[in-house]
Amino acid sequence: MEIAISDIAFQEKYKLLIGCIVPRPIAWVTSLGEDGVINAAPFSYFNVASIEPMMVSIAIMRKPEGVMKDTARNILTIGQFVVNMVDVHNVDDMNQTSANYPPDVSEVEALGLDLQPSALVKVPRLAASRIHFECKLHQIVELGTPTTSDLILGEVVHVHVADELYEDGKIDAKAFSPVSRLAGHSYATLGELFDHPRPVYTPDAENK
View 1 (cartoon, rainbow, N blue to C red):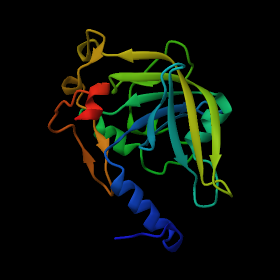
View 2: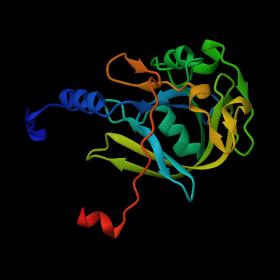
View 3: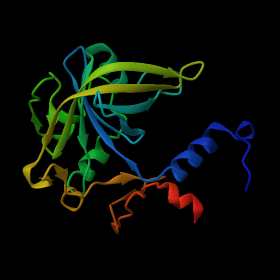
View 4: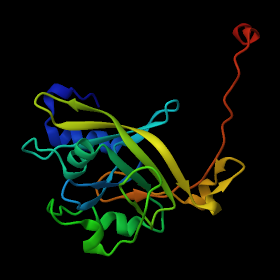
């Protein structure tokens, strides 16, 4: 199958990308509006952007009319947000926050989600998550002409990790039990884990 991108429509591009680029980690983002409304929403176009400085990236698609989603607008206005990581214990709550709530309605209040204060940002974190990245906005990159997506680059200024997940400076993946996004309505857990040590190049290898 050969697919010419210029020949396919938006929905086909969407299905191709989300079906091929899997699994995707989920950023369950809390943000704060100018009116004090606490927003919570999940985004699966999310990943590591940099180690030093420690940064994450989240791409937030705009609404069909080109209007920023609540999370992107809040981050642009307040300059802070929290990424609450998703696992098998909170995936149901996370999914509930994906509904299209009006800007003046807090998903946190509507669903009765518990909050905890953050250490360095004024945006609270979700108690249901066991890993939190407190972030300050580094940059927003507008993608498309006209803009169809806002790429958020956030600098991580503080991290919270539950004690049972952290050992010898590493996250215990099995204890964490993260949940990732697939296509459609599908999600995935870790499944089978296996190791492949990175090979070391040696000049002798060229002669074999």
